[in-house]
Length: 89
Image (cartoon, rainbow, N blue to C red):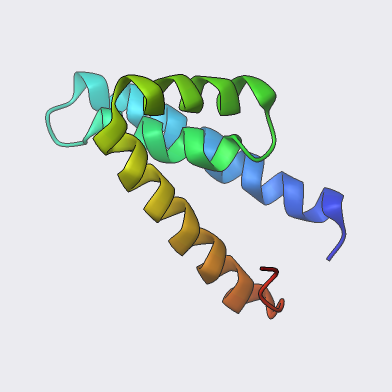
């Protein structure tokens, strides 16, 4: 799968989580901050501003940063299994 074909679903999913997070800030049913963080983690692979914002959040909230790092590693492993790519350590 080429880079452009991978980028489109990543952007759609990342922005969908950001939008859900914004809606979740106003609705008591959704966890807004959680969805915004997931969206930032996804978009940080494509946008520099998202990567910098995520880095600042991790510095400000170290425990949240550790959880975000663990979630990122799990997501990468899941995507590798889904696409059939070998592990790149």
